[in-house]
Image 1: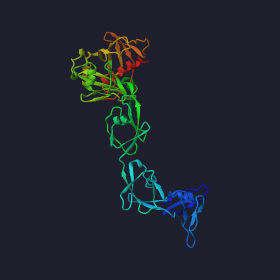
Image 2: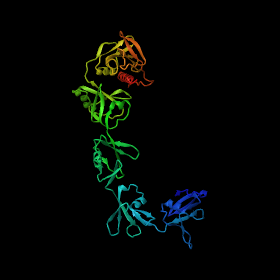
Image 3: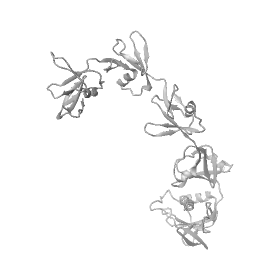
Length: 451
């Protein structure tokens, strides 16, 4: 039973009134409803005549669309249509208040919205099923044609850049959709739009099978970007648009490749190292101070958000430890330093110091390498490493100053102290170590060049 409040000028009641339209009971707090409002409740077309059932010997009363009816009388008011047409739709009985209906109107009466998904058939007595198109008219008053069934449609309709296309294939690839739409995949790539506003790009999956459903898939094309600079987008943690080629940084050199994924071996070869088995590859991600090792059976997605650069490390190295080893570092720090291939020492001078010799300095400073010193507390790695110290002192080639510098006597030299600090709580015990601190040092060096 529905509770309906309707007519604008109707008197509102405290208790709902019941009334029946074509066998269905309704409730309302309005004392009056017009014929048009009563028809609307039941989905009766306005041109169809609606009657109020009246007790004999009186005649049933015709209710015009503008006629207000008082629903507060003693008995429940009953309204009906004298002429209606009943038929079966997939074995379900439906009623039409129109004698002549189209195929689309039959679907509407049955509550079928996706008419592209079905084909409508009419069963005639003594005859086979006859196909009814959406705009074809059927006279429901003729005996023997009151049965309809549907079958799944064999045709899928979709749009590409607003143009309607159709196919009888159950699956199409992005390549086929572009070809059928006369689109050159060298210039444009395919995007699928979904009803929730999301989208899927097929820029790198031309041969993926897409199920062509009857609901009307929506596709559009976009222009390829010429070159996607992985480092540039990675430093901003922005997604790289699909590109014809990609510029990547391996160690200190840049390379351009014409595909969006690379294997570990391909990265090593690009870097000019023919002996692939002798090197490990690490990727550096913006926001993650710890480099991530790429396994030999892995491929790297160059469009990965926040990807910045790659670094190669020899798998087997000579022991880089210098003569002076005044205290021991954790095993993971020793392993990391030895993989770097640079000479290093630990000193008590006083305080605990690690010195890494000939540490690489990015372009833009007065030197290509410098000795890098780090001070270690006795409670390390439970407590953080702080700041960095360079010898010889660093100067920017552009003449701009470097902030927060000081001098630090160490091992008979004057090192340049960079006062750079983590925020409180950013050092994570069990995660951060010498390698992650060096990632921060690299970021300090790079970012200061932008000041």
